[in-house]
Length: 299
Image (cartoon, rainbow, N blue to C red; front, top):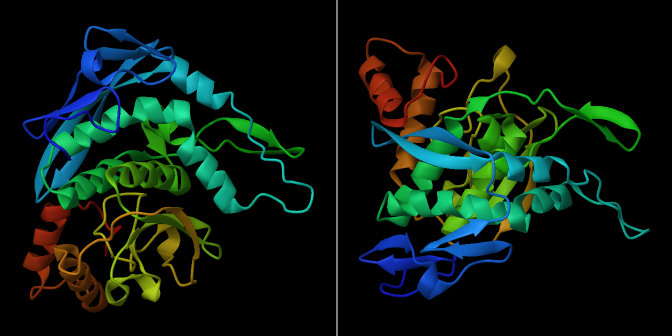
């Protein structure tokens, strides 16, 4: 972050280490107009205020954010199909990149990225806030159905819609987290576990620390969990056993080799192997408080 200069994200100006809106100096993005120091999007109509929870170092925090009905409606009316070139059918990755990189959506999600960046000085803590924030969004399916190549299927929401509805399933929440981490500057991927029909996020990290030596650390998005903990138990007692398809979303920075989550994830796995007992219950309670873990999900 360059001090006393405009950010690459309009209309933000870096002043004393914080990003502030300064449209008179930094200008505005497309489809918006200047109002004082603010940029007002054509899609900022039907304002709804939401409160996002995250846990950092054992402390609960709350972040207020505004979402807009007009943007949610615009996103929901976008075509659901991607047409190939006649020889190649669109891949799962193509759909992920389309959902994450939609430009009008990006303009109204970037203020959330800025709020995250202003909430922590270190890039690693910004990453932790983004992860916890998405994990703490309620897990739930959309009630909508769409016609997809002649079949009625569950509606898959874009990242903006997950925020607007304040709920999402694993794939939808993973796209939102991948967007946030990409904009913060990390190299990201989405893991798709075909056998278990589950999705999670990958953040680039040292191979020796990574999930199944993939070069990416595992990040669950369905609910609160420790980064790099791939031993979670899901509904019905299911655990992830298959090797995932790895869909590359963005290039950027890697997690460093000294991230404290590596050790904490190993401690949680040892507790899981032995079961919670009098010898490890204090360690288990400490990890639950530190990461805001809930229920039996992490045992």
